[in-house]
Image (cartoon, rainbow, N blue to C red; front, side):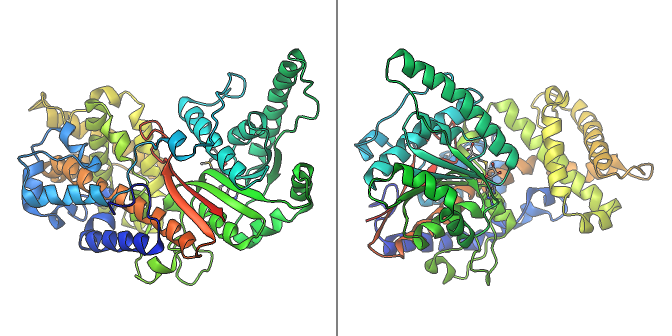
Length: 493
Ligand SMILES: C[S@@+](CC[C@H](N)C(=O)[O-])C[C@H]1O[C@@H](n2cnc3c(N)ncnc32)[C@H](O)[C@@H]1O
């Protein structure tokens, strides 16, 4: 892997990297196949080397949250250090690439306050970098027409259109997003027209992104859309010789949508380039006999017979970079909420087993509950992990657990509470609560490697197409601002 800093040049090298990952992570499937909500019910810590747990259970939280980023302490046991550092060496590097060096023809437009209206700092950073990369790739493959797939409210489409003068078709499943994009584009257009009138450049004929509402479920569907009159018209307005080369892009196109984009790139002769940034790997489909399935897509990974499953794909979305910079109190609070959520799972399995077995929405309820608790008064009150409240600690933690659980039960419409022994459940869980931090941190260290595996599968899929396709993976955003920062860029040559 030393030869390919950002991604491997050949399919053979990529496959070698993929095999090294699979070989290393397979014995640790108890980590990546598990879910922290089952921590107490399945006694998850028992699968982990006892020496590792003993080593980490008294470590300060500041050290634990560095584990997913590959940091170890000198005094830790050797096999533990090797586990963490090997994972780190197998993960794709995330420092933002020097884009100006790698894409010498790249020009970066600085975005004004009108076009960035409504964007938060993260979105602004992403759009600024991605639009510049797209415009550079578009110039390379001589296209003026960009398809923005999963365009959301059109932030990227509008910057490509107004700042880079590209013809853009913004596709999104949500008609609401389409309407917002259109209204926003009209407002921005007025600003640009006024600016151009002032500078006596005219400003007439400025085009805004064309919005299309469609839930794209396969490459066949996308190809049909790309051949439709709407898109043909936009394309031919820009074309001088009757051909319509296209560039496909998507910023954080969820789950299978990013994969559909890659398939369409290979299957459609009009699509000359693709710039894809994926997200929500948890939403990827993984069905063996479905040709449109989202993982795996390369022949190489398919041949290994690897199956990830929902928990591992969830884990691939974890961001080591976010944890690394998190304040100590926020980390402690998060571990506490994990403990409450796992305790709540115990309570459900004990008192409401049929609800637990029959409701696929409990996971989401748990997430919503954690989010709600995160912003509630409890935020100031975390005590389970507090260094200073011994004695009082257990009473407070227990009553907070009861409060957390009652709120969860209420959300699930389970209101018969008189027979529930909240204190008893917490008493059973409490001796193992301090193992959640070590367990969570070790498991989270697998996240970047699982994400790397999913991304390398996509890269390999393109490389397997042969020499006519040039593909590269580049971290184009600052990972501390936007951790899902890897762009897969491919061109037909
Ligand atoms: C995470 S958002 C990203 C939005 C936008 N690209 C951005 O970064 O601001 C994903 C978008 O993809 C859209 N989407 C998800 N699945 C889709 C599908 N199958 N077809 C079309 N759009 C889809 C959603 O409606 C949502 O607006």
